[in-house]
Length: 230
Image (cartoon, rainbow, N blue to C red; front, side):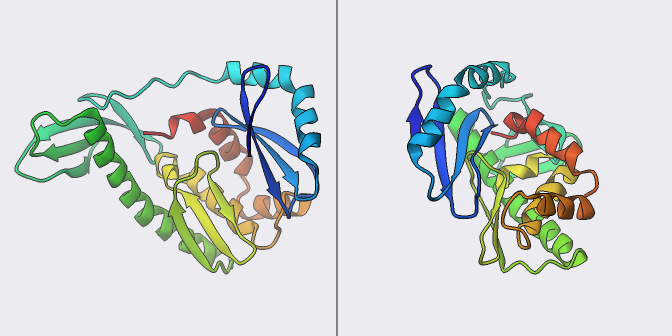
C-alpha cells in the first residue's frame, strides 16, 4: 500500500502477521513502514508524519546513482568487482562472455539500441544469478544444517530476500552484483528465518553464530545497495 506524503516523498506500508512492532526503514531510496497485521494504517501514517523531517534528510543524503547509457566502456558490477562493457559486431547472436575485467557482448546488430543492450545484460545477469545464488544457497544450507523447502531467484524492488513460514526462500537476482561475502550474508540471513520468523534478539544471535561478520556486510548493503542495478 503506497502513500504520498504532503512533504513530497512516497512511502509504502507493509502488513505482516509475523511483526509485533512497527519499523520504518529506507531501502534503496524507498521509504517502507512494516507494521503488525492488526495495527491501524492511520497509526503508521501518524508515525511517518512525526518522522517526516528525518526521512527527508535521509533521502537527500542518498548518493546519486549515475544513469546508465549502455555503451562501450561503461562500468557494471559483478560479484563485487567492476567490469567494463565491450560491444562487438559478430556472427554470434546476442552472446555475452565474462573475460578478465570485461563483459563482452557479441551481436549481429550493428546499431543495437540502449534498451536492447540492457535486455541482453539483464538476461545474462539473471542466468548468472540463478546458477551462482542457487549453488551457494544449498551449499550454505547444508553446511549449517538448515532445511529450506525451496529457493526462487526473482525480482524484488526494495528487498534482497524473503523467507516464508512454509520454508520457501526467495532471493533478489541483483545480489549477483554484490561481493560474495555479502551474498552469503543475505542467504544466511534468510536461512535463519527458518528458525525465527522475526528480527528478535534470538534471530540476530543465530545470524551472528553462522555469519560472525554480518554487521560489516549489512552495512555494505546499506551503503551500496543503490549500485546493484542495471
